[in-house]
Length: 402
Image (tube, rainbow, N blue to C red; front, top):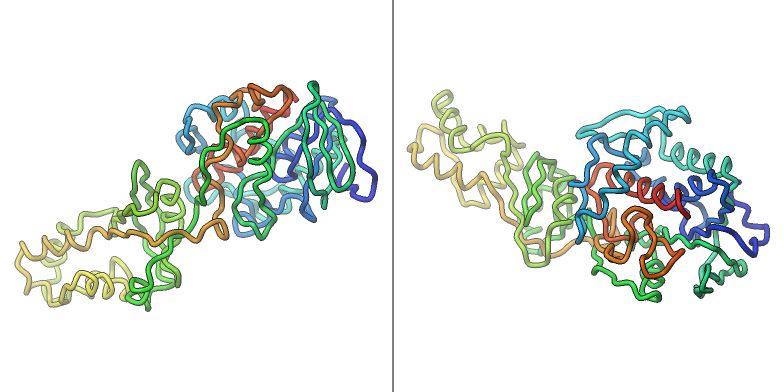
């Protein structure tokens, strides 16, 4: 059944799920369909808030190309089992079973044709079929192990359960109610936490840099962003606070404070050779005019100004000069001032250390009956539906055994 907040809490259930987001609702449906009695609790005023706001309101619910390589974790092997046993195709089949129209955008990203609420309604329908109960506006207090099972104090009463599933998410977007509750419970039972930080998040720049980029907010271009082991060919967007766009959000997961991020500003061509070709074909054309066919006029003038390159007709540059100019303009190195933090971050990097968790069942190895699923774990996907697929897969893994 759906939210029945006015009814008293059941004193005892087989499975208690903390968190009514993507992972929590999925786990509740899977467990309930096995005949388990399930209760889901959430402190928010409605379920699935992050689902509702995702994908610009259309929910990028999975990715056709999901693979373990699309995830960032201290243990890169941990996600393999769950992802292999509940794939993107399994979730697509569920979406199709409910008659939800969807479409593919770039890079295998699948979005609802209508709105994100379709996915929330689907999960609630699955929970109703499974007779899983859901309560919102319920704050969690003390959690205690009973040896066999758990006792959880809440603002709506006390519940005992055999299996306790932590699906509380991470710290991203606190205005939607994100808290560190899942990490607190993990620490209470002696589990390690891989240090957390904002991920899939825009970069901020220093004031002086922003002043030089005064005309650029709203301008975008295709780049390859590289930092550490990460490299992404996506769009870069200039903002009033720094830089954003898919390329920046993706590479932010690989960036550490003080590091430089390298942007290839013409990723599909070598600028020295391209400029030589332009010179041969259009010797009278000015450098900034030619570059404006590659970028916008505004961006071309900015990049020339930043490199202190004067624009002249191409024929006035020697081949060696033009070759050097192409090399200078090809890349831009940026040392960000920081990120916009959890306020706008799509996910949280780090979380409950997966060394303490069974990769097959999501159960805590040292604490029988305690499970962690979704974003609360140290598993973070790339931008583009991967984090939702991890929520579905990890929730399904736990739902089959709780």
